[in-house]
Length: 199
Image (cartoon, rainbow, N blue to C red; front, side):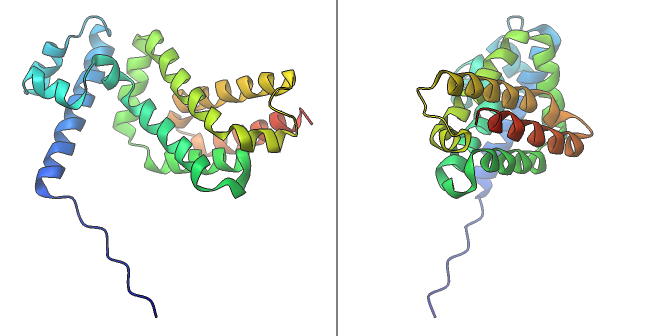
């Protein structure tokens, strides 16, 4: 019998404190971006509202863009991880697994803040969609295998662009919807049909 694996250590008090401070700064900034617009809220404004020093804000987030796109970057990073960790489930299988996990992980308050921020700042929403679309590219080998076309085929590029846009839109709209479970099923059915259509 092999040695038992050590249980993961719990975050220290200091680590938990830092995580709470980071989250406070992020949510405060998103609220201000929604209320005042991205350009209308400065690092100093965010610091004042969060009751921290401006340098504390920039210690966690070097720029306003890093705050505004933090949730999108985290979501996109997790998608890239899914593609790297299990190639056996295929492209649409990876997308399905990732979106299901994101729905379970969803923080309703953070999702509402993000949606309000994007509604007030369409440019940020476009940048967020680009981040997710770029992460979809991490699954290019799996996509090529499932779509049944070489990567240099013109139709493969068209389908890949459509898939990237569809997934990005899902993250910014469907993931936050109250009936997201039903929409997820319909979305995956549509996505699989889109991928199969190229065969």
